[in-house]
Length: 525
Image 1 (cartoon, rainbow, N blue to C red):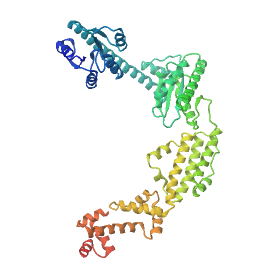
Image 2: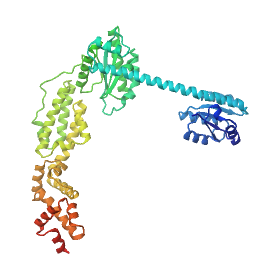
Image 3: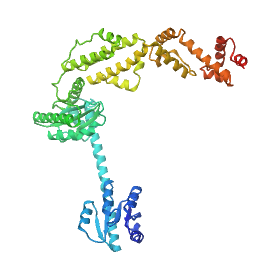
């Protein structure tokens, strides 16, 4: 569908053009008119306009102003300008705005029709070009996906780790594969907890850095984004050492640019030029090196980067419970932080060391919270806790974030657990709100993050009665209140105070009051 808009502040002129041309015969489906820039803008907002015929001289916004507005809106209709006199400045601006024709009034109808026919042909050619470009993009995307899928299969060992097999598979899938090439894998890692989508901002920086290193095809072999990582395979047929130096220099420039321009720590892990059959082995080795970089060191690293491993690093398991037991949670965190920072400073912490320290701290923590009757697993069931816990051993920063979060959250509930009166008040409030529900000792204990036995013990200490007996008292008390003040059926009252069985409610009520609910209501009345 092709639509035209005629804009002229002279109403008769605009409507005359609209009515004098048989639009269907020249390939235009519908014509609209506007008598000002504002009206024209409204038409563009409501309709899909492909051709515009516009007068230059109009009050409250010239034709040039309208075309600038159209361009700012990223619209691109075929534009034709009308003017009553020739003006070089107008013509120059019209050319800059992409106007295809510039006509002087008055215009012969035959000439105007020819101009519209050419505009229609331009629209058709433009659409065909856009369609071809779209198809080309689809093809390029499909081809890129085929390449990515092939190399992912190589790295994941879905294709045998044999250079001949890999070459034959590439030929079978009609992929370009240079038999003389050797391949190097680069793993780019962003160390930023809020790095969702940040690769989009860093792509240009990476491209510029690698192109400076004469690596122009890096984008074609990018495989995937995974855990803030980008993986790239570089092929080379000769001068491997020289090309490696350039690549490492490009990676260093990328790391530097990310730090200076984006304030983002980035590490690049480079493999070595080897046969394609060794790529999967390279990949596993680089992942291990990246995993052991728990201090988030920024830079370009190769296979020679190995963090010192220490087998005898253990925390004093008696020290941490003492700090927790004393209620000195702030000092406990500071000591843990100082200890792990000291290891990092001496380059004596890798993923295994960090994992050991993590479990030693968690053991001390669990001993303390269990001693105070707090159920640790109930403290950390929310999504934030689970996410922090899962990433706690990835880096030193993640570890410290988790320990700080864990101690601060536990501190609040340990303080609550040590104050029997506060615990009981929270329990009583919970019972009051949920009196019509089936309340269990386990459910109530989970509400205050305590074990059922511990809660029952402190409840008896604080109130002098058992928790279950207290619940029954409150149910019967509420039932008596309703029997006195309302005419609700006894079955409805029983249900409202947590008894789904009317007979059992009657039995309990008689045991507590010496008469049935019906007798109680009759006596009170």
